[in-house]
Figure 1 (tube, one colour):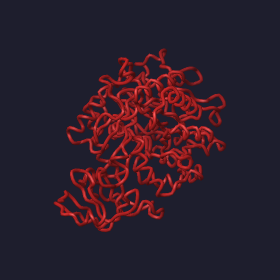
Figure 2 (spheres, rainbow, N blue to C red):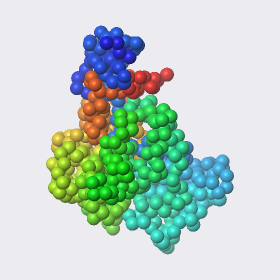
Figure 3 (cartoon, helix red, strand yellow):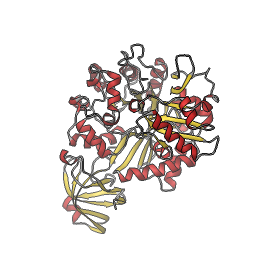
Figure 4 (cartoon, helix red, strand yellow):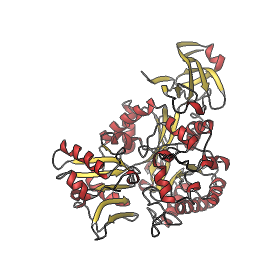
Length: 529
């Protein structure tokens, strides 16, 4: 056999063992070890003793949102509202009057002064339209010029227009209230989405990411346009969709079909439709809001806010009806549930759907699953569900999460080890652009679980480096029904891998390890200069 490429002189951490060489033909692995090294090849690549791992797979990210946000006013490094206003003013100086100024990434937990206000934005950018997106994506601050264009008397269910003591809007729109902005900004042009995918996926390859799951397209809070899947297809046609993508479809775009097809998309498409580059994955449903924004649905009030237990984004009975209909129609379901009250309601809905229509290997998911009580952890495992937490959250927004929960509930926050011990398959993800999405950063956080202030959040939830690596490769592939092609390096699987400067399963390397190269389909598509 003459293969396309033989990669040799490296430590190949396959996910099930180690090897010394890898042979690729037509985009797939055909041999490993000495069998691979002995094959005739069109090209041989000496990897100089480096370490090779399966390509990283981000199980919950927002690639289009991240790519498009690269043009926004960056606010993640701001540490006071005055710094936010200064950044807005600088952009306003270069923006024609009447134009939009979009910023993203602010976190009120890190800002002296809390949330920006419409009055502050009015002073910073007079004569402009201003929108600043919270890092969670669950709230937005706008200036007076934008508020004047909104019907504040018709706030969507599951949303809130925050007001000050005299009843005037502060400019903060929480959760579904952000949908009131849609007539001003929606839909995003398809070409803009394509450009975002291009820029984002190029960045991902430099971080060793070869596959992702896009957590909501076509509608809802995170959808950019009803034609979002067309944007992905166009990006693929042009060769700028550089990572394999499984897209979750927003629940709001599914509807009743005929009696045979049930509930879903026109033409009867559902989970699994597509190919190795672009597939339809789960239906994405939002149950509640944000932990650091203190809008997620809780059994008990947030720390220091005795009247605030958060709220649901849709009525509880609608959550149950949507899950039941999608399950019966054959969809995998991924439900965003952060607060412990939301998790209880979602578990009830999954349990009822599975009892009514048993389905083996459904792989239904709870996205984030942030505040997971011990009893609910056992129930989640018994139902065969997948929790999809984000290890990187602990470092970047962990202090805000601790402040929202108080010490009694900290041990329930973004569990990792407990899920493995309960027998669950654990995926790994970033929720980028909510936080920095480089997998190597996340691996360190999953092992150490240190917040930005140095506090260890949930010490019993720390993983070993090997467990963290397994989650960011095999676990994520499994969560997308893709483990037959991805997640480990084995003959017959896609030849997607990352070449690293050191062993990521060695804790001593976590602060210095780098991505040297990335391969997709057996071809090196990124090489560090």
